[in-house]
Amino acid sequence: MPEELKPAAAKAKSKAKKVNVKAKSQLDGFMNFIRKQGVVGLAIGLVLGVQVKAVVDQTIASFINPILGLVLPGSGNLNEKSFSLTVGAKEAVFAYGAFISVMISFITVAALVYFAVKALKLEKLDKKT
Picture (cartoon, rainbow, N blue to C red):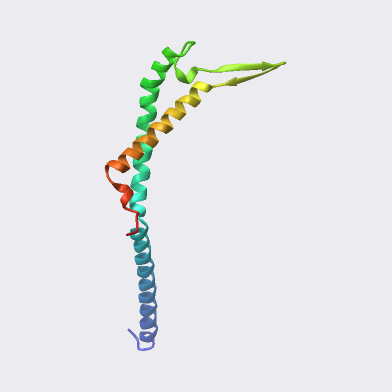
């Protein structure tokens, strides 16, 4: 390499090293943030929560709603239960069955999460001692 290019090459190499150190520092900071804030645990909890909700929703749609549909007056399953009010030429349909179904799903998921946290003693993780 010609002598006049050596200082420029050394300068470029030094600059590349500084960029590498800065990028590594930012990556380390990001990884420390993930470790300290429990982001991985939060992500795992989110994924599991979504899947538990899917299972609960299907269980309610497949078993609970048809049983409640038989018990409640009218025909069809719980999701199809509704009543309507007519005022003059306007009609409003209230789908109370779908609302009850969603509420059953919510209460079931909330209860499952509560009892899972209690059973695994996870409520003690955030307490400061």
